[in-house]
Image (cartoon, rainbow, N blue to C red):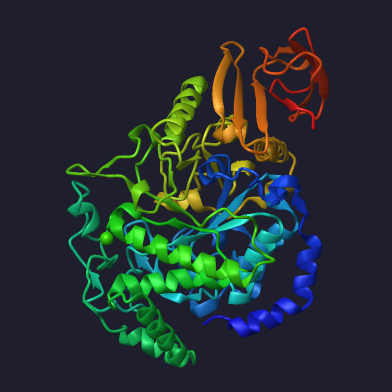
Length: 565
Ligand SMILES: [Ca+2]
Ligand SMILES: [Ca+2]
């Protein structure tokens, strides 16, 4: 299934390792950390609250290899935007190597699951659909050939790491793919096929199928089960049955776990960490299986991450630990640590999660900015101290994004990238990729192919991207923005500061909005003393603080000030 450790060692002696060491920046001073990873912030929660995470659907981002577009004989007969459309790992690598993610100040890339998906299609009521999205697992131990090969995957992770960018693996443990004429059901001692979740309480959220025909893994079962015959036959055809079985034997021998379904899946999920060096998981449907399962998985993943670090000392980015972020649908920071199922609350942060996706921001982003910023900064320094949230304005299955018609792509970037907490850029937010597509039904609207072509046309797209890039790089340079203390300094026009003290430095920024075009004088409210030279990251213009203010001539009304370094 994977390259062996021996092969890996040989590969490291080759050209790749020379290029790798030549490209890596030197450690940054006393912290001895790779400055480019942004992890001079040693506290994991501060790092992830100041991070920018780029979330992409691999099948919809960039087609780097047309040769794999028809893998597994999947047809192009799905409903609008519901077939595989050709995007792949080679495409992600191409954009990585051209510096696209660096240009946005991205700290981490989250790709949709890359494991082998259903071969067939189903119609859940929104049209004939293939598993292009990655959440319909057929085999947890293989890369889907439509997305590429294990070598392609390794190339993506390695290229990201060379740039100081982390890679989060999107991990599914709650369910298999749906049953189709080409995709048999997993055995009855592995999955339940009913009842459908009613989402009234814990049991009707966890012990049930998310939708019709989405078999739910028996994650609560502790009794041993045999490998599914269909999987054994598949591995036999692929010439790797003996190795897979031997690896499983070794895993169960080492851990002492019973051969229950969830432990097989944990073995398969953590292998990718151990062998490819993923820096964290984004756990899919985290509220639909027992939270104790998450804690078990986290422990195994940390062990796998330690193994990878020990085997690849020259490739380790820094000493940040393995990160696990959960998709607890509906969670928002106002809930504090207690997510309410109706009949019980669960503190997911106590079960291995270092961060949770914030499903509230896209709604709150339209309100008073200072209200949102003040509340978020306070909760991150209060009930959520030590953990992280990830804000977004659009995502792959949120039918109510901020700005569904992309009428405010500049404002969306400003709000998202200046908010306290981690920022998720959903691919195309930065290009105003349409979120409504003629003929598409349901979530397919949110999953159109990346609109790269708009960058070459006249129109606003290139300017929108530049706006997101300026804010993203400002955010990357200043962890205070996502993780610092927030102070409103002036209501109209709005001016605020963020301050973050770490062992390495005191990071201070001042953001002034609606300052008008051309000459402007921005008061700094004592944040910077007279005589300090400041730079506006939006325009690149510098100026000295005199009499408590800085005079600048810039085109934009948005001013992003920090001390010139
Ligand atoms: Ca392709
Ligand atoms: Ca479940």
